[in-house]
Length: 526
Image (tube, rainbow, N blue to C red; front, side, top):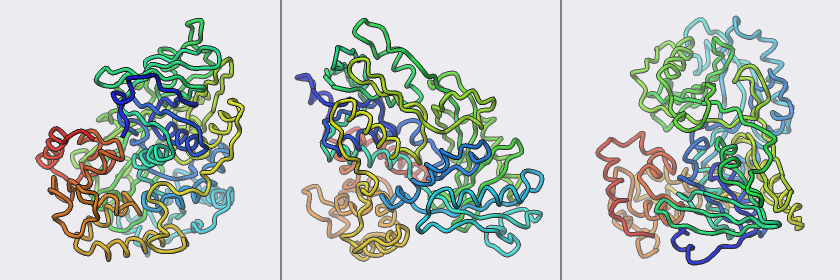
């Protein structure tokens, strides 16, 4: 794992400097590195520390966007669903969504028409299509109030969003990129055909970077970066052509509300939709909201009013009422949406725009975007940058696996991702029969085919028994995994592990979480 301190003795030269360690920045760095370019990625906090770990965690086309005639965006996202699901079946999997029909909201014919479009706007190879449900005789109807008699069902996908970002960064690093977390781009000056940037880490150490191109993938901070850090040779910021609309999306997590493995999509009273999704075995994830904010700083907190709103909306449907006092965790992220002058935040586009400034050394700014389209966004960004640098190179990510996603050494040829993971899990539990099956399942989900790399001794040998994994720092969390996360995935604090590399924070008590903090406080540097 590279640090600024290790690099600070000299100026670092690269082809592209990417600022921002969310899904778009990590995705672009991965794509460029895979094309053979020299890439530096810097992120002022942890990878996925903000919006990219605060999503509803869906790989989806966006059914509700059809109402706003966002057919191009929906088609683009639908085309990506199966591509992404195949690339990382350990952290992404298909999910069936149930929409109880509320006649007062949208008529049945409109929903059927929308689902027909959803099924046919893009080719599906293996995800099942939509259909109707009799909720009186389906498991999904049991938790609902008895007046919901019928509903609809369709397919989308689930993703561990923070791990997706991390795996993109791991892939980028393994293809030659330099990834610097806790490192701020304090200045980037354009001098003819070159950018000269100053990066500063949390300890104040500085690194000077010379880059042929600069990527602004700062998400909600994209405008601020242009205004405060990026300068042309005359000392002025680049001309701004776009602005962002900042919208907070909040979520709550409560104890599990239903036993089946389907998710719900509810029509809210204000015309929005709210999801209720199975989460971390013992919980239900409920979200999201659309609250406009003036700036990202200080806005990443789910307010009491938003939490009450989410409880009230799901209580329109569930038999057992959800109260704010039941919330075990809440989180929020600020979405950087393109300013399209839609009157209502819920109607604002979720599409993205790549703005390439070629007045000297190329500057590419990413405006907007969503997790489902990150790979396509990164591919288009890399295409534009390579062309601007006079070195077009072939795209490659469409059929590539993310780290841990290639299960062939364990199960042979791939078939369909969900079945492939089931076969892989069976093989992993057989190989690690001496470990608790729930732990093997968690590790298989997190690391996929790289589970062997995680379960190694301090000497790097494969673990053969429990004692080889080092101390059990917290229930189900051994030193071997913590060492791997520090050395390979840039985990530098307990929160990096408990809330981003995993969601163990939901399962461990305060004292158990403190033992993880103590381990990081006393662990030797990488």
